[in-house]
Image 1 (spheres, one colour):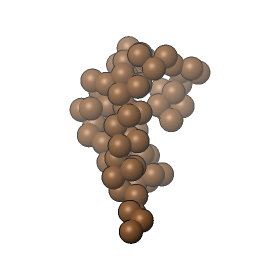
Image 2 (cartoon, rainbow, N blue to C red):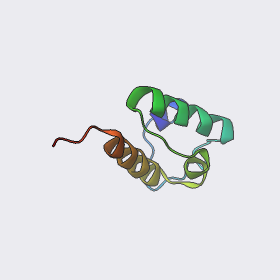
Image 3 (cartoon, rainbow, N blue to C red):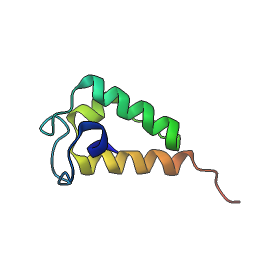
Image 4 (cartoon, helix red, strand yellow):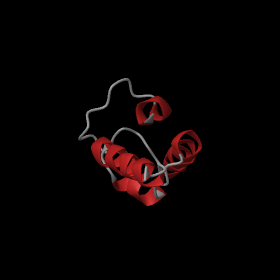
Length: 71
């Protein structure tokens, strides 16, 4: 999703969001799309300062915590 929104074909997991051309507005868009698509909540600041890997891990953690628990 990040690559799609920034327009980078295949970013490395260790590329930073900003180095790829991301800015605060794009980070906000990423956060909104993540919440709409997967119910994931991620802070815009975490996106801006994060690498692709860190953002991915944060999104996964948020998705998992929002998923209904089987009891």
